[in-house]
Image (cartoon, rainbow, N blue to C red; front, top):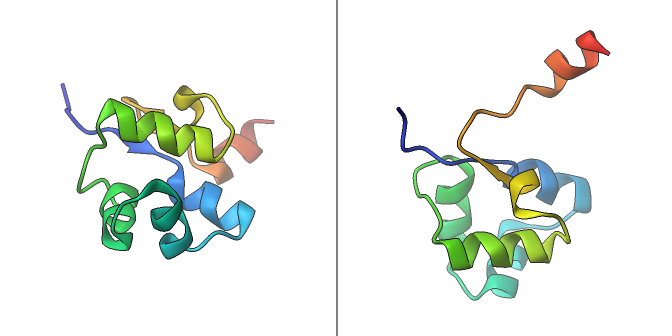
Length: 79
């Protein structure tokens, strides 16, 4: 079983027009940390994951998952 935590941070940032630096400043982390999170090179602590979800005003399970999220193109084809 993979220990990787998958996320939608980059997608959510793009949808809301938020830069990595703006998100990092709001969370109190370095902007490179946001990049590491987006690329799956770093798994957030529970506290940070909850803060990220709160920033986007979404439940944490919408932002993070232990299973890969389906690609948007795959979801559109099945609809």
